[in-house]
Image (cartoon, rainbow, N blue to C red; front, side):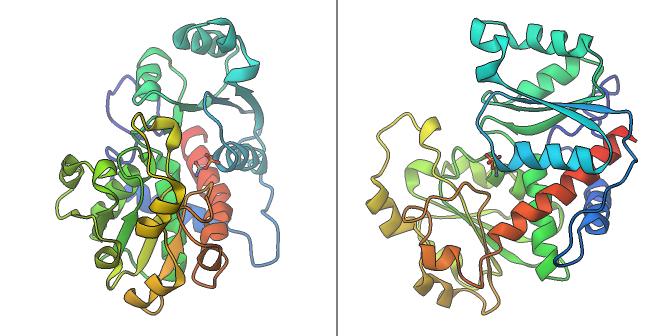
Length: 309
Ligand code: CP
C-alpha cells in the first residue's frame, strides 16, 4: 500500500507517502461501510480467519476501540495489548516485544507509540503489515482519513476548501497527516496557534500552507475549523494556563461569524472544554466531532480490509 521499501509488507504508515488514488479508494470504501442513519454497522465475513493485534503504548479511546470494532465487523479476531499491562512495563524492548508478537503469527499489527517513526522501524523488521495508529508528533494516518471522510459527508469535494487547523500544531500528528492529505486534494490550509506551538518549518510540509498567530484571521472565510488538543504530555516548557490559552486560541461561538455560514467544526478528541473550545461550540449544530468518531469505524474497516483481504 505504501512503497517506502518494496520488501515491506503492505501496511499503512503515513499519509505523506500514500497515493491520492489509494486515499480515494479508502474513502469510497469507507462510505460503503457507513451504516444508514439510526442503524448499526453491518457485519461482514471478509476478514474471517484473520487476527489483528492492537498494540497501544500510549493512551487511546477512539482509535483503539474503533480499530477493534472495525476488525470484528469484518469477521477478524482482535487482541488489544496496552503497554501498562504487558512485559513492556518489565523493560522489554520494542523490537523484542514485536518479535514476540510476530512469533504468534497475527495477520496485522495496529500500533500507537510515543516515538515518531516507531511503526516505520518495525515495518522494516517484520513481515507483518503494520498500521500506524499515531506515532509521536509525526503522523496519525487513519485520523486524517476519517477527517476527510467527515468533511466529504458535508461537502462535495476537498478542492478549494479553506481549512483552518488551530491549536498545538507543534506536537500534533493529526495536523501533519491532515496537511499531507488535504494538500494532495487542493485544499487551502491555514495553521494557527501561539508562536511557541507553531514552528515556521511547518509551512514547508506542503506547498501553499499558511501560518497565522491570529485566530480570527485564520478562521476568516473557513469552510472547516479543525481544533487540536493541547498536548501537555509532549510540552517541555511551561505551558500557557488553560484560561490564557482559551482567551487567545479557544473557539467560541462569536468566532464562527468570521467563517463561512455552513462551516463545520472538527476536533480529533479527546476535547478539553474551556481550553480548546467552549461547550456551546462543541455541542452546537456546527460541530461534527461525533461524526468523526463514527467515521473512525468505517475508515478503519476500509483500511484493514485493504491490507488484509
Ligand atoms: N483522536 C484520537 O486519536 O483519539 P484517541 O487518543 O482517543 O485514540
